[in-house]
Image: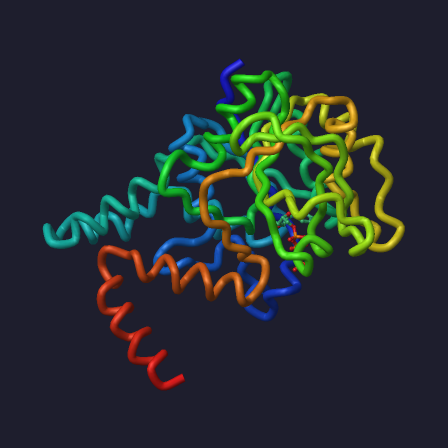
Length: 292
Ligand code: UTP
């Protein structure tokens, strides 16, 4: 079945990027001239996804406003022919996809947030993109790479990258065997492993394609005794233990907008390639680096 629906959980508290995320959801923090969540919606649209559910818990208004027309502003921009490119950039955001919103009423973890998407998804396979994982790909959009593997093998897929030990213990570890280039069978996942528990240095980095029975797996996942959160990786692990999960070692550069260093890395690297400011910014960075 063709995948046309995606879910973007964006209801976390963003405590690691406070105070920036106090009134503005971290998913609305910018990378150069676009909020992070726009990169996700553009990734979905480029992969053929037409309907997106954004799961929020606060700051819903500004996310909705961003993906809507802004009549007054657009009228003003249209009056000046020099501002036409700016008008196009502003206006086209609202046409990227049909966007729906729902609230996660209590912040009880990513698995719990995804449960709120059940009626939106119905009986179709769907994509999940974590709201703070931005992946810039020079080739096919990353969620498209996962959809390709799903369509080829008829199994759920998760996006992975090899990470250093200090990140694996904060994210998760996967037990895998190689199937083909950049594609692995997954047997098990452990969330936030100790160093002794590490199965491989592959970690799940913010992209999945799953079937709706994943909601039953989430419902059967007990909250973590340590944090009280329902981890989505436990539902993914159940899929893996049933032989139904593939890992795609995706092509693309991932930025973690959930922490301050990740936000700065995303801004610097995207700015260096930006058509408008890239050259000036490169000169600035070089002169700055010379004095470090
Ligand atoms: P994170 O665990 O990175 O986000 O969740 P967080 O909870 O906001 O982080 P900190 O620790 O407080 O800084 C990954 C994604 O899942 C969403 C987040 O918005 C983020 O996009 N999420 C997380 C939810 O939607 N609901 C939750 O209860 C938890």
